[in-house]
Image 1 (cartoon, rainbow, N blue to C red):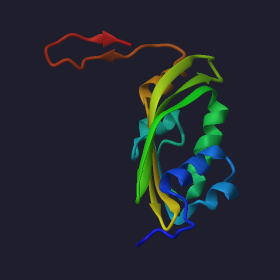
Image 2 (cartoon, helix red, strand yellow; image 1 turned 180 degrees about the horizontal axis):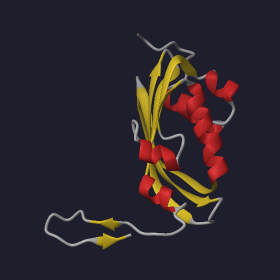
Image 3 (spheres, rainbow, N blue to C red; image 1 turned 45 degrees about the vertical axis):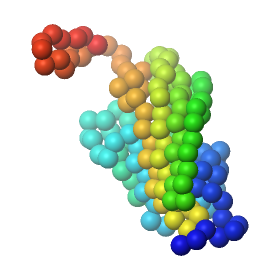
Length: 158
């Protein structure tokens, strides 16, 4: 289907949503009725325990609630867009952010990637990825992980 002359590009629609992502009525103007949002992973209960918005949600409310919760959990110190791309069906944004946890005041930096799909000039799918290991560590009060990843042996304490 050809894009109507008045329809905004996929990247412009994504950027518009990201300009005011905590206002449900505003964001709904730019999302389809069958909108799907994926935050950090498709669905891992152990991540959802630390970050309640993690996983897949249907409906614009999941996207909006994520941005509301992020502002409750962290102070956003910096958000940088380093590159973006689009085609007729979608857009992607790559960058980084720096957050400070509101509970422990720990600061972390993470790369980010946002993938968006568009139907009829509206977002139908958005996937947000970050360094979840780093962001969860901003809430680590105590303890460490003993990680054995190297098949040749050895462990790492984190």
